Length: 139
Image (cartoon, rainbow, N blue to C red; front, side, top):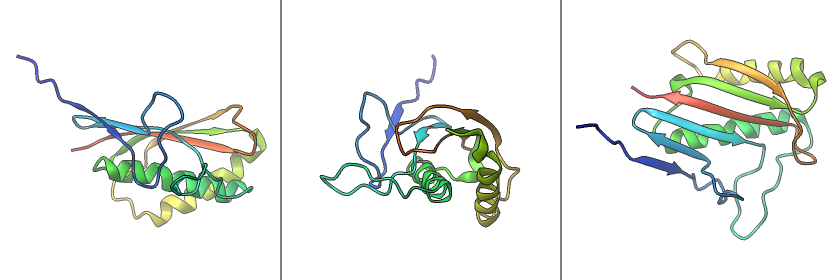
């Protein structure tokens, strides 16, 4: 008989309900997928999402915090992350984003090798500069 582990949707209290039929994150067994997150500040009841600020630094740091909130909601941390995808709206932001990314992960005190990463250039809604998703494997 096959073990059919339940798939669980993950929505931390910091996040609003997704604007369409998807989950901010899902966990099934030891696999946790974080949907693409952007730099919105933590949710305020009854208010629309608000970007962290206009700069790449503000948005990248808030986006990473939003990814981390979903990882934590699913019982994971950065050491469990196998793959990170970064979506940028401007190729000229690559070097700055790498500096912000490196400094952020230097502060995380990882005990495992860093995750693999891909960076892709995309269009995002007006004012948004970066989106990040992650895949974690626990245990």
